[in-house]
Length: 79
Image 1 (cartoon, rainbow, N blue to C red):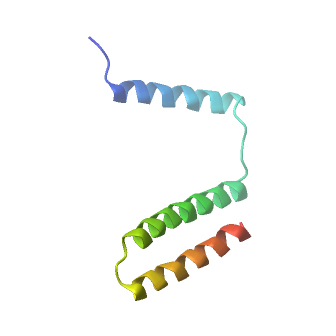
Image 2 (cartoon, rainbow, N blue to C red):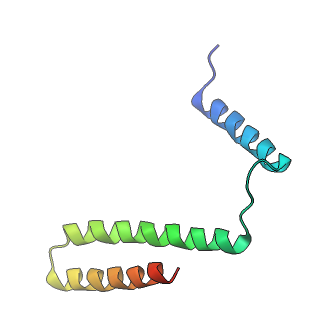
């Protein structure tokens, strides 16, 4: 019987975990992990805001979104 996609995915995750314990995988320090997590979150927020700007009808709403976009852009540059 053929295995499903989920079981293959679990097997891949287990293999990756084994590789991580043997030292073949590079370790990232916690500060870098946190920085990457914040950056990814800001990038996702920027994507959402760009989509909202494209769909906004009210000019005041667009201005608010543009202001939020500028704030996120500043945060991204400081990372």
